[in-house]
Image (tube, rainbow, N blue to C red; front, side, top):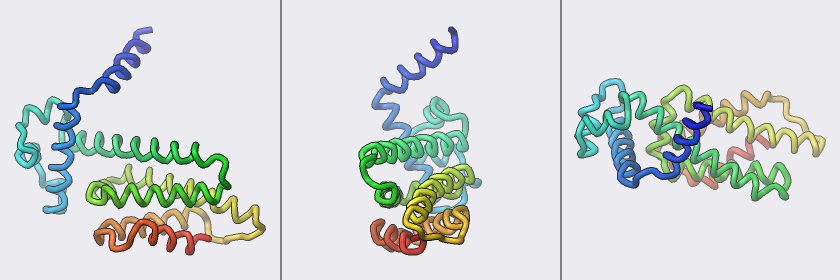
Length: 195
């Protein structure tokens, strides 16, 4: 009973987040991303560095986060949740389409999301947990393609895990290089490799 009340309280808090808290968290996130992009090494950053860049104080930082790793973890969780929500919405809208078409659209949407927040995702790709979760998402898309190929009587003798790993490598390179190709062009190239 007590656990249920806590869950309801947490849900209510998520629904009624003060816009100032959202803005403050966004400022800390943007500060972290810009500092990592400039310095390239998260391990040398301090809370004071992030607070200074965000033009907020350390006490405010500690109201929202335990440490820099907590900030990074929350940033990853929030963005993965947003990405999954967007992908789920697309999947529901495309239920009437073929699996191949739906997974193609998922790849396009996924790459478009990465492109829109390239700096953020470039930083997050350095996190092993985030990379593993992106790998699982890519694997799911590629498994749809595999099912579609099998339905058409075509086979592809490369394991899906290898295809997902190579695609993850392409995405990492793409983000590292500053997204030199458009999301739609990259999606087309990836599909050609895997189809």
